[in-house]
Image (cartoon, rainbow over all chains, first blue to last red):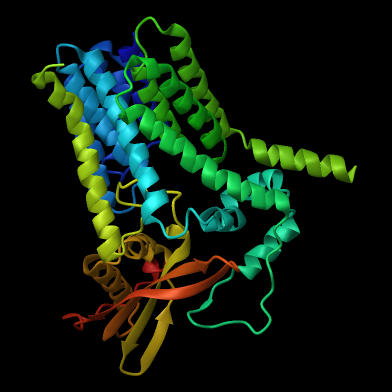
Length: 284
Length: 153
């Protein structure tokens, strides 16, 4: 049951976000569509080897442009293909899902905590919240920044030539709610990713299974409300479904519900609607 | 879990690790953007697509000017700015030279520069830094290309 649902959700991820150059895209869509429509194709390892090959070809053709979740999706399709060829497919898929989630989060933690020069000191989120148009509504809502403040800060952050300095540099306008948002997002995401990596990679045994699920579900429900990469969220949640044992119906339902929550996040501009509603009600 | 089953479960993760470690190496020694290349460095640094850009300069007898990155060059420019290797810089330079020649303009060299915007923390300020500069010498076409109005970007 979990395996079939996992396979269908994976095919759905491929269908919902068509990818790659025009020479590969129809083939990827056809493979995913076939998997959804035909139970035989869905459970054939050849379908998933073919999809793995097509996704790998897409990564090579578009390199270095593909996002990280396309790589993870490729490894995941390979994991499915390998599992379907094994005697105990469900067990192989569970182990693959646990290792892939844990390792992907571990790499994300290594980048943020060790390799990046501008993450832990808060620079990344200060700059991103202020300059990335995709987060403009969220930063107004959560950081209590007005549109004029946002525009002023963007002017202040215009780059100067290397070595140049302004005689009277303007200062950034950062209300305390914004500073708290930067602190919470920097350390909250880092801590959550570290906890997921530890929970999935350290051999705690079955006692930690519920903690693993709670962390993964919590991470996806919070992060993808803001981060504009629904495909990554769907993939993680699909791998989470693969980790459910056949009798864990409630847990599986929670993953599916969160999967659709991420779909809603991606299709309904909730932050924009709330900012608009707050602006209208304050001006009325 | 037996060994025959174990390799099936581990192989995808071994691939992930191999690609991720290669990505770290390329980011360290060859300026690959940490956001790209399968190392899971997204949302970890400002050094991504938004804060890198390319500049193109054309030289020929009687002309020396900076070119705008047009729509037809965007894909090559994006690859070059995210991974400024000789291969991608040369591809972008060639595409820019071909475009100029298609429009009947002479080209002797194309200089491709990749820049990034970096931020200091206290106070938060940004400055531009050149990551790489690459010069492509262009052979004149054997048959002069005629300007083609349909090839406007």
